[in-house]
Image 1 (cartoon, rainbow, N blue to C red):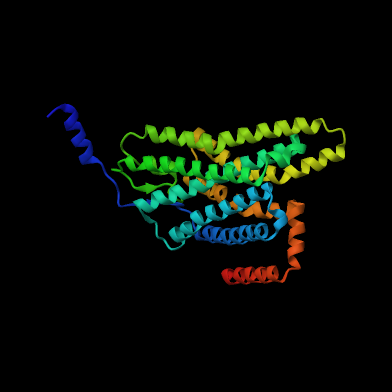
Image 2: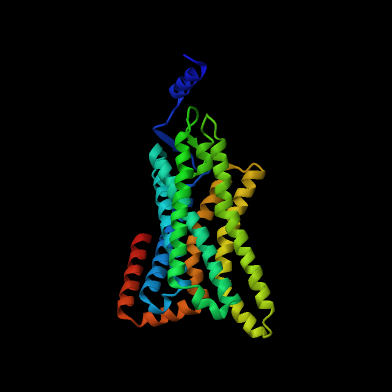
Length: 335
């Protein structure tokens, strides 16, 4: 038997796939359960806010435009992303069920980052919509159509699915022969593959690539679109018209800031200096949950079309009944 065959047998015999991982969460923090109760409140408000926005766009025919198809997609991914993350976090820490089956851990990782990926590129699609609207206003309705936006968003979903399947699939080739304690609040990619005891260089490369695709490239593309928008606005002679055009971008700029800035800050701090696991958990939980909570509030309060649609539907009995049931659901959950 040759040396290569002996090595292969040895590798196969020492390959360890654990039955479960242990999600550590906070360490040595008194009354940590109150923080998870706060997360529960965030989740309830996120579900109500995004459900309201999805229902509003679905019911009001005047909102069936490219811009609001993108907003609908963002609200949907916010709702799904929060549902993929927060209920399991609450189950893990409020009821002290910290052990998670290996396969469930990988599924958990996949769905949390899949919806984050879609959210990121949905914001890029929004930037493109604003770019065409301001820089090429006369051609906007010919370039940005419902089928074009739907096809773009479908591509984002398919590409996100493919990339995350690769990222999570590569975890399956790792051997976990040491500690099985995940130093995070969920099955995050980095804290999981750091536990492996065989070569993780490919996972590191894919992790860096994921950071570039999910955060860096979208942010650069959005920045470039707003440079072009700023140049186009500088050519508008009327200050009133310039301000009116700029107002159409404020909601999107706020969404970009609350989504990307915490993500970049957390990742840069982790890569450059040591950060205590408790601080990292707080940063990560708020980064993954607060944008989904604020997005529908921002679009409900900052967008004239949405405010007008709410006023219009408030006179509709069917919508009044829906609002009544949502209020009753909120009261029941808060009890």
